[in-house]
Picture (cartoon, rainbow, N blue to C red):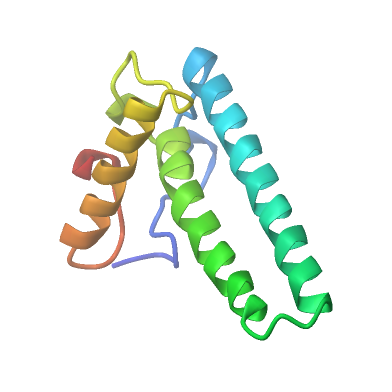
Length: 120
């Protein structure tokens, strides 16, 4: 029986290992880059909305969905470092594309909508 929304064990002994070393640093850099692109996109959209462009408001939800879609694989890799290739770096486009495909493929194939490390 699930114990909560995240369906994780509680307590210090059940704490999962987080990414460390080069993988963690590359995730931090990739997350920072995604955040900067998101902020710049929001500033761009705001500038066009304030000038009265009729469809610029549609950029805000589009940017939000793209930002979340880009950051979820980073969070999955950070919380499941043992299930990511040892040489993977989130700042390399090929490695990020691999991580993106694996993460969203695991979401697609999951019966309960949850991704576990073993699904990667």
